[in-house]
Length: 333
Image (cartoon, rainbow, N blue to C red; front, side):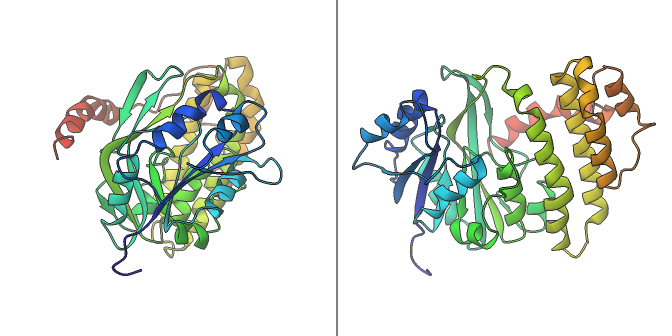
Protein backbone atom coordinates (compact mmCIF):
# COMPACT_ATOMS: atom_id res chain seq x y z
CA UNK A 1 0.00 0.00 0.00
CA UNK A 2 3.10 2.26 0.01
CA UNK A 3 2.47 5.52 -1.81
CA UNK A 4 -1.26 4.91 -2.10
CA UNK A 5 -3.84 7.01 -0.28
CA UNK A 6 -5.60 4.99 2.39
CA UNK A 7 -9.35 4.55 1.88
CA UNK A 8 -11.98 5.13 4.56
CA UNK A 9 -15.39 3.45 4.77
CA UNK A 10 -18.17 4.59 7.09
CA UNK A 11 -20.61 2.08 8.55
CA UNK A 12 -23.86 2.89 10.32
CA UNK A 13 -25.30 0.17 12.60
CA UNK A 14 -29.04 0.98 12.79
CA UNK A 15 -31.73 -0.37 15.07
CA UNK A 16 -35.03 1.37 15.79
CA UNK A 17 -33.66 4.90 15.60
CA UNK A 18 -35.56 5.89 12.48
CA UNK A 19 -36.50 9.27 13.91
CA UNK A 20 -32.84 10.30 13.70
CA UNK A 21 -31.56 8.15 10.84
CA UNK A 22 -32.27 10.62 8.04
CA UNK A 23 -30.25 13.33 9.78
CA UNK A 24 -27.37 10.88 10.26
CA UNK A 25 -27.33 9.87 6.59
CA UNK A 26 -27.74 13.42 5.32
CA UNK A 27 -24.75 14.47 7.42
CA UNK A 28 -22.60 11.71 5.91
CA UNK A 29 -23.68 12.64 2.40
CA UNK A 30 -22.68 16.28 2.98
CA UNK A 31 -18.98 15.70 3.66
CA UNK A 32 -16.21 17.97 2.41
CA UNK A 33 -14.38 14.75 1.48
CA UNK A 34 -16.51 11.77 0.47
CA UNK A 35 -15.74 8.41 2.07
CA UNK A 36 -15.10 5.33 -0.04
CA UNK A 37 -18.61 4.15 0.86
CA UNK A 38 -21.46 4.59 3.33
CA UNK A 39 -22.92 1.26 4.46
CA UNK A 40 -25.99 1.06 6.70
CA UNK A 41 -26.98 -2.16 8.42
CA UNK A 42 -30.59 -2.48 9.55
CA UNK A 43 -30.54 -4.86 12.53
CA UNK A 44 -34.16 -5.95 11.91
CA UNK A 45 -35.70 -2.68 13.08
CA UNK A 46 -39.44 -2.56 13.72
CA UNK A 47 -39.83 1.18 13.09
CA UNK A 48 -39.53 3.25 9.91
CA UNK A 49 -35.83 2.45 9.34
CA UNK A 50 -36.38 0.20 6.30
CA UNK A 51 -38.57 2.74 4.49
CA UNK A 52 -36.06 5.53 5.17
CA UNK A 53 -33.24 3.45 3.71
CA UNK A 54 -35.22 2.86 0.52
CA UNK A 55 -35.19 6.60 -0.03
CA UNK A 56 -31.37 6.57 -0.15
CA UNK A 57 -30.94 3.90 -2.81
CA UNK A 58 -28.01 4.68 -5.06
CA UNK A 59 -26.36 6.94 -2.49
CA UNK A 60 -25.63 4.40 0.25
CA UNK A 61 -25.39 0.62 0.47
CA UNK A 62 -27.96 -1.00 2.76
CA UNK A 63 -27.34 -4.43 4.30
CA UNK A 64 -29.11 -6.60 6.85
CA UNK A 65 -27.91 -9.54 8.99
CA UNK A 66 -29.80 -12.81 8.70
CA UNK A 67 -31.17 -12.41 12.23
CA UNK A 68 -31.19 -9.71 14.88
CA UNK A 69 -27.75 -9.46 16.49
CA UNK A 70 -26.55 -8.25 19.86
CA UNK A 71 -24.88 -4.85 19.66
CA UNK A 72 -21.22 -5.96 19.52
CA UNK A 73 -21.99 -8.71 17.03
CA UNK A 74 -23.82 -6.16 14.89
CA UNK A 75 -20.88 -3.78 14.95
CA UNK A 76 -18.64 -6.63 13.82
CA UNK A 77 -21.09 -7.53 11.07
CA UNK A 78 -21.00 -3.96 9.79
CA UNK A 79 -17.19 -3.74 9.80
CA UNK A 80 -16.90 -7.12 8.06
CA UNK A 81 -18.92 -5.66 5.20
CA UNK A 82 -16.78 -2.53 4.78
CA UNK A 83 -14.17 -2.40 2.01
CA UNK A 84 -11.88 0.44 3.13
CA UNK A 85 -8.37 0.19 4.53
CA UNK A 86 -9.78 2.19 7.44
CA UNK A 87 -13.29 1.96 8.88
CA UNK A 88 -15.40 4.29 10.98
CA UNK A 89 -18.72 3.54 12.65
CA UNK A 90 -21.35 6.17 13.42
CA UNK A 91 -24.49 5.37 15.39
CA UNK A 92 -27.79 5.93 13.62
CA UNK A 93 -28.80 8.71 16.02
CA UNK A 94 -25.53 10.68 15.79
CA UNK A 95 -24.48 13.45 13.40
CA UNK A 96 -21.28 13.79 11.36
CA UNK A 97 -20.05 17.33 10.96
CA UNK A 98 -18.97 18.23 7.39
CA UNK A 99 -15.30 17.65 8.31
CA UNK A 100 -15.88 14.15 9.75
CA UNK A 101 -14.31 12.15 6.91
CA UNK A 102 -11.73 14.80 6.06
CA UNK A 103 -10.29 14.88 9.59
CA UNK A 104 -10.27 11.10 10.04
CA UNK A 105 -8.67 10.68 6.61
CA UNK A 106 -6.00 13.21 7.55
CA UNK A 107 -5.31 11.28 10.72
CA UNK A 108 -4.63 8.08 8.82
CA UNK A 109 -1.75 9.83 7.07
CA UNK A 110 -0.13 11.25 10.22
CA UNK A 111 1.63 8.04 11.31
CA UNK A 112 2.52 4.93 9.30
CA UNK A 113 2.15 2.88 12.48
CA UNK A 114 -1.31 4.20 13.35
CA UNK A 115 -4.10 1.75 14.10
CA UNK A 116 -6.62 4.19 15.59
CA UNK A 117 -7.64 7.78 14.80
CA UNK A 118 -9.66 9.74 17.37
CA UNK A 119 -11.05 13.24 17.23
CA UNK A 120 -13.22 15.68 19.15
CA UNK A 121 -16.98 15.48 19.47
CA UNK A 122 -20.00 17.20 20.95
CA UNK A 123 -22.72 15.70 23.09
CA UNK A 124 -26.24 16.81 22.14
CA UNK A 125 -29.71 16.15 23.50
CA UNK A 126 -32.79 14.79 21.74
CA UNK A 127 -33.46 18.08 20.00
CA UNK A 128 -29.86 18.63 18.94
CA UNK A 129 -29.04 21.19 21.65
CA UNK A 130 -25.39 21.25 22.71
CA UNK A 131 -24.62 19.69 26.08
CA UNK A 132 -20.83 19.47 26.05
CA UNK A 133 -17.79 19.67 23.77
CA UNK A 134 -14.92 17.20 24.14
CA UNK A 135 -11.50 17.45 22.48
CA UNK A 136 -9.40 14.80 24.26
CA UNK A 137 -7.05 17.52 25.45
CA UNK A 138 -5.36 15.18 27.89
CA UNK A 139 -3.80 12.93 25.24
CA UNK A 140 -0.91 13.55 22.89
CA UNK A 141 -1.25 13.87 19.12
CA UNK A 142 0.50 10.52 18.58
CA UNK A 143 0.59 7.93 21.36
CA UNK A 144 2.61 4.71 21.04
CA UNK A 145 2.40 1.40 22.93
CA UNK A 146 2.48 0.77 25.83
CA UNK A 147 1.03 4.20 26.62
CA UNK A 148 -1.88 3.42 24.31
CA UNK A 149 -2.81 0.67 26.77
CA UNK A 150 -2.00 2.49 30.00
CA UNK A 151 -4.05 5.58 29.12
CA UNK A 152 -7.16 3.41 28.65
CA UNK A 153 -7.04 1.69 32.05
CA UNK A 154 -9.44 4.02 33.85
CA UNK A 155 -11.86 4.44 30.97
CA UNK A 156 -12.04 4.93 27.22
CA UNK A 157 -10.11 7.84 25.73
CA UNK A 158 -11.99 7.50 22.43
CA UNK A 159 -15.55 8.33 21.42
CA UNK A 160 -17.55 5.85 19.35
CA UNK A 161 -18.84 8.94 17.52
CA UNK A 162 -15.38 10.13 16.45
CA UNK A 163 -12.99 7.34 15.53
CA UNK A 164 -11.55 5.33 12.66
CA UNK A 165 -9.64 2.06 12.96
CA UNK A 166 -7.35 0.26 10.55
CA UNK A 167 -9.41 -2.70 9.34
CA UNK A 168 -6.46 -5.07 9.47
CA UNK A 169 -6.13 -4.29 13.21
CA UNK A 170 -9.82 -5.10 13.71
CA UNK A 171 -9.27 -8.41 11.91
CA UNK A 172 -6.15 -9.26 13.92
CA UNK A 173 -7.86 -8.99 17.32
CA UNK A 174 -11.12 -10.63 16.27
CA UNK A 175 -13.19 -7.47 16.28
CA UNK A 176 -15.21 -5.93 19.09
CA UNK A 177 -15.43 -8.27 22.12
CA UNK A 178 -18.83 -9.92 21.83
CA UNK A 179 -18.82 -11.04 25.45
CA UNK A 180 -19.51 -7.38 26.28
CA UNK A 181 -23.05 -6.02 25.97
CA UNK A 182 -22.48 -2.26 26.14
CA UNK A 183 -18.88 -1.12 26.43
CA UNK A 184 -17.26 -3.36 23.86
CA UNK A 185 -15.85 -0.28 22.17
CA UNK A 186 -13.65 0.34 25.23
CA UNK A 187 -12.68 -3.32 25.22
CA UNK A 188 -11.76 -2.97 21.56
CA UNK A 189 -9.53 0.06 22.14
CA UNK A 190 -7.73 -1.99 24.78
CA UNK A 191 -7.38 -4.98 22.46
CA UNK A 192 -5.73 -3.00 19.67
CA UNK A 193 -3.57 -0.88 22.00
CA UNK A 194 -0.43 -3.06 21.62
CA UNK A 195 -0.67 -3.03 17.82
CA UNK A 196 0.36 0.51 16.92
CA UNK A 197 -0.07 4.24 17.44
CA UNK A 198 -3.22 6.09 18.45
CA UNK A 199 -3.52 9.42 16.61
CA UNK A 200 -5.55 12.35 17.92
CA UNK A 201 -6.97 15.03 15.65
CA UNK A 202 -8.08 18.16 17.49
CA UNK A 203 -11.17 19.27 15.48
CA UNK A 204 -14.68 18.40 16.63
CA UNK A 205 -16.11 16.13 13.92
CA UNK A 206 -19.40 14.75 15.22
CA UNK A 207 -22.32 15.03 17.59
CA UNK A 208 -23.13 12.20 19.98
CA UNK A 209 -26.77 12.13 21.01
CA UNK A 210 -27.53 11.48 24.68
CA UNK A 211 -30.12 12.17 27.40
CA UNK A 212 -33.19 11.35 25.33
CA UNK A 213 -34.09 7.93 26.75
CA UNK A 214 -35.46 8.31 30.29
CA UNK A 215 -34.08 6.01 32.98
CA UNK A 216 -31.74 4.25 30.55
CA UNK A 217 -28.87 4.48 33.06
CA UNK A 218 -30.73 2.34 35.56
CA UNK A 219 -31.96 -0.16 32.95
CA UNK A 220 -28.45 -0.65 31.65
CA UNK A 221 -26.73 -0.65 35.02
CA UNK A 222 -26.34 -4.41 35.49
CA UNK A 223 -25.13 -5.14 31.91
CA UNK A 224 -22.70 -2.24 32.22
CA UNK A 225 -21.29 -3.57 35.51
CA UNK A 226 -20.98 -7.05 34.02
CA UNK A 227 -19.00 -5.56 31.14
CA UNK A 228 -16.75 -3.76 33.62
CA UNK A 229 -16.14 -7.08 35.38
CA UNK A 230 -15.21 -8.76 32.06
CA UNK A 231 -12.81 -5.95 31.21
CA UNK A 232 -11.14 -6.10 34.63
CA UNK A 233 -10.85 -9.88 34.89
CA UNK A 234 -10.44 -11.02 31.28
CA UNK A 235 -9.54 -8.35 28.74
CA UNK A 236 -7.18 -6.09 30.69
CA UNK A 237 -5.12 -8.98 32.17
CA UNK A 238 -4.79 -10.54 28.71
CA UNK A 239 -3.56 -7.30 27.15
CA UNK A 240 -1.29 -6.58 30.11
CA UNK A 241 0.32 -9.97 29.60
CA UNK A 242 1.45 -8.90 26.14
CA UNK A 243 3.77 -6.41 27.86
CA UNK A 244 5.39 -9.18 29.96
CA UNK A 245 3.89 -7.95 33.21
CA UNK A 246 5.97 -4.78 33.11
CA UNK A 247 3.10 -2.69 34.46
CA UNK A 248 1.46 -5.20 36.81
CA UNK A 249 1.39 -2.87 39.82
CA UNK A 250 -0.03 0.02 37.79
CA UNK A 251 -2.61 -2.25 36.19
CA UNK A 252 -3.72 -3.63 39.57
CA UNK A 253 -3.99 -0.12 40.94
CA UNK A 254 -6.03 0.95 37.92
CA UNK A 255 -8.43 -1.98 38.24
CA UNK A 256 -9.05 -1.17 41.90
CA UNK A 257 -9.58 2.49 41.12
CA UNK A 258 -12.04 1.62 38.37
CA UNK A 259 -14.04 -0.59 40.74
CA UNK A 260 -14.48 2.32 43.13
CA UNK A 261 -15.40 4.64 40.27
CA UNK A 262 -18.19 2.21 39.40
CA UNK A 263 -19.20 2.06 43.04
CA UNK A 264 -19.46 5.85 43.05
CA UNK A 265 -21.64 5.82 39.91
CA UNK A 266 -23.94 3.23 41.47
CA UNK A 267 -24.27 5.35 44.60
CA UNK A 268 -25.62 8.16 42.40
CA UNK A 269 -27.93 6.05 40.23
CA UNK A 270 -29.39 3.72 42.87
CA UNK A 271 -31.56 4.42 45.86
CA UNK A 272 -30.21 3.06 49.14
CA UNK A 273 -32.86 0.32 49.12
CA UNK A 274 -31.67 -0.85 45.68
CA UNK A 275 -28.02 -1.29 46.59
CA UNK A 276 -28.12 -4.64 48.47
CA UNK A 277 -28.71 -6.45 45.17
CA UNK A 278 -25.18 -5.55 44.10
CA UNK A 279 -23.34 -6.43 47.30
CA UNK A 280 -22.31 -9.96 46.31
CA UNK A 281 -21.37 -8.79 42.81
CA UNK A 282 -18.95 -6.12 44.04
CA UNK A 283 -17.51 -8.52 46.60
CA UNK A 284 -16.86 -11.07 43.85
CA UNK A 285 -15.30 -8.36 41.68
CA UNK A 286 -12.96 -7.23 44.47
CA UNK A 287 -11.78 -10.77 45.10
CA UNK A 288 -11.30 -11.46 41.37
CA UNK A 289 -8.92 -8.52 40.93
CA UNK A 290 -6.95 -9.31 44.09
CA UNK A 291 -8.34 -6.45 46.15
CA UNK A 292 -9.53 -8.82 48.87
CA UNK A 293 -12.38 -8.19 51.28
CA UNK A 294 -14.17 -4.85 51.17
CA UNK A 295 -15.39 -5.24 54.73
CA UNK A 296 -13.32 -2.47 56.31
CA UNK A 297 -13.18 -0.18 53.31
CA UNK A 298 -14.56 3.31 54.01
CA UNK A 299 -16.05 3.81 50.55
CA UNK A 300 -17.67 0.39 50.62
CA UNK A 301 -19.24 1.13 54.00
CA UNK A 302 -20.60 4.42 52.66
CA UNK A 303 -22.20 2.52 49.81
CA UNK A 304 -23.74 -0.04 52.15
CA UNK A 305 -25.19 2.64 54.41
CA UNK A 306 -26.85 4.52 51.54
CA UNK A 307 -24.40 7.39 51.34
CA UNK A 308 -22.75 8.94 48.30
CA UNK A 309 -19.38 7.39 47.50
CA UNK A 310 -16.85 10.00 46.49
CA UNK A 311 -13.53 9.70 44.70
CA UNK A 312 -12.71 13.31 45.58
CA UNK A 313 -9.42 14.21 47.20
CA UNK A 314 -7.38 17.33 47.74
CA UNK A 315 -5.45 16.72 44.52
CA UNK A 316 -8.68 16.02 42.62
CA UNK A 317 -10.01 19.38 43.78
CA UNK A 318 -6.87 21.16 42.59
CA UNK A 319 -7.08 19.45 39.21
CA UNK A 320 -10.74 20.45 38.88
CA UNK A 321 -9.76 24.10 39.34
CA UNK A 322 -6.83 23.93 36.93
CA UNK A 323 -8.50 21.90 34.18
CA UNK A 324 -10.53 24.76 32.58
CA UNK A 325 -7.38 26.90 32.25
CA UNK A 326 -5.42 23.95 30.90
CA UNK A 327 -8.11 23.19 28.31
CA UNK A 328 -8.19 26.84 27.23
CA UNK A 329 -4.42 26.92 26.75
CA UNK A 330 -4.36 23.61 24.86
CA UNK A 331 -7.06 24.84 22.46
CA UNK A 332 -4.46 27.19 20.98
CA UNK A 333 -1.79 24.51 20.48
